[in-house]
Length: 82
Image 1 (tube, rainbow, N blue to C red):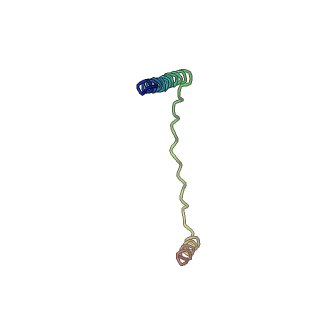
Image 2 (image 1 turned 90 degrees about the horizontal axis):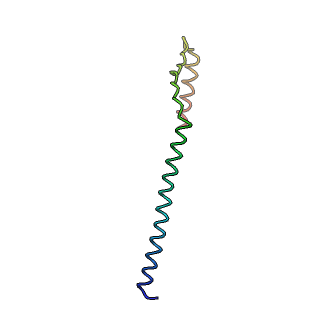
Image 3 (image 1 turned 180 degrees about the vertical axis):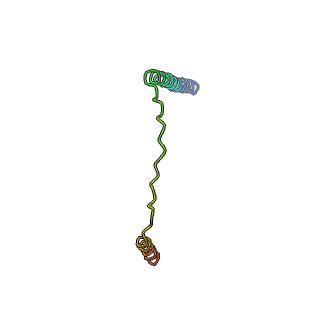
């Protein structure tokens, strides 16, 4: 085989390979688009339900002074460790 014959065979194989990949990708796009249209036609998306505003927790009417002292002591102990 001479070099021009090898080049022609290589070009034929390249065109065949790239053509088959191109055809596969076109087919993939067509099938995906068709599936999308079928699914949106027969299974439409549900309308979003409006969310209720979050409920806020009520603060206690009075704050216990013993609780404040315990929290302060815990913070002081934590900071003294560092």
